[in-house]
Image (cartoon, rainbow, N blue to C red; front, side, top):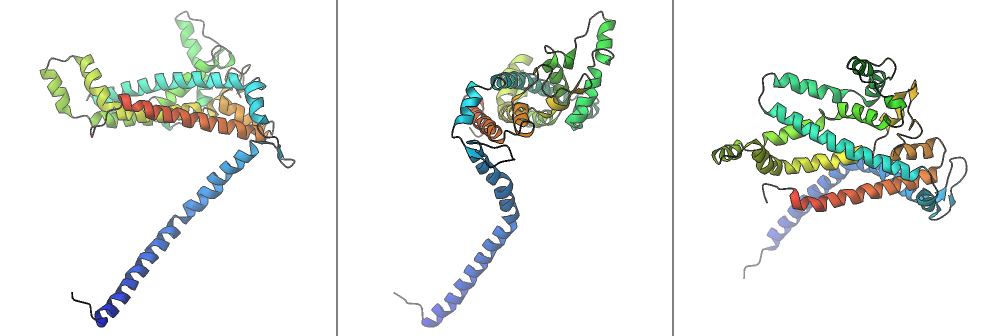
Length: 320
């Protein structure tokens, strides 16, 4: 067996060291380039999350050092907080209504735009523009529209003989009123654009084959559009549920009686995140607010995992 001469080995060793040095330099450069993100993640996300775990086991009001109380904050939350379960119920009702109506409306708008009608670009812009309106501006605008005494909506209803409700100043109509505002801002936004992209990615040959087989419009929608669009529906569903559960700004700033509802009237729009916010920044119960935050995080995480597990039954990917 031939053995490399010492001269060849001597040449190979510097070459190998040179390659290792260049690889090491690229590795160090990569770490340097991502270091701002790593530092930001540790300081602004991971660090506060770890701190909130500890604070959730303490009583802390920002004015005195935290006092360890174990699981007491969680016992208070589930057993002695009169606003906790009500905020959970209202948030679930809100999320179910917004996601169901909003995603259905977004899909309908996307299908209309995908139908190739004249003026589709104009309609696309008209549908999308409301989503560009900041939620605070939308709340103020719709607070005027929904004003029960001189608001345009109740004025139009009175023309046809309908006595308009109190909307945001009514305990019965406060959530439907906020839902109307959010749907105006939600239906024609990013969800519609994503649905439209998904629809345009369905091969036309499938519809042509269905026409040859004599399929009607409903059969084409049920057997082709929905299965082919299921990954897009699943994506919008997961993101939409998380966004709906985080409702806060609209309930906080939407005007009712000249001021923001701030969960009113009579706690009619007191959602979970609003309860968390008030516990932390109004009542300075930082320990209790941290416990609320972790319960919310775990609930959303479990719900998302359940959706991913359940998606195996109805989400169809082309590769599968």
